[in-house]
Length: 239
Image (tube, rainbow, N blue to C red):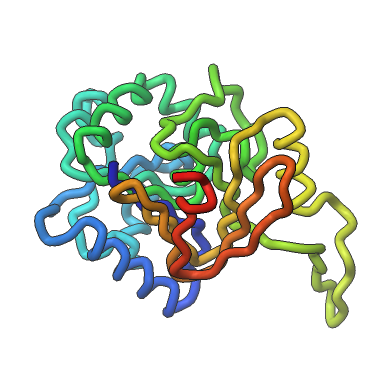
């Protein structure tokens, strides 16, 4: 399977260029049209327009799955898939309602390239349980596509957070991302990769390579491990 997962946060020129370069290298010249799944936001049409306006289409023809009368059929005929960011609960709720879990698994197993960013990365995991989002809807299940064997916490930021109030920085005393992931591991054994903004995980040929940034690998019962761009995470995952 070929899976490209981005954390998001592509708000600088350098990160946008990295995004376009990764898309071109991942999808290649043989792909012309990418089926885009915009279910993580409310206005699907506006989402697709914004993707094109900001160059997040990588120069490919991006077509929203909502434009087709039958979402499942559109997915089964796709040559490449891109699942965008937004609210992971809303996204997985729509995915289950449209019956896309098994068709997506089958499609990607057959070689169709899958790209996810932020919420789209969350739903590539076994579940969407390591999201940062509020449960604005109540999905029938947290089960996700399971295209990779690990969980991802997108937009990961290590350590304590300080917020700027006026000209001063004030410590935020709420739970850190490490705290949240520790809570997850109190009930679940699956490894979690805290993926920092701008970074990618490229899953291909049984390998998981970290690109364009840093990540932290969390596994229950062992110290966390900070990883840098170029690292083959599959070694630490036992792959």
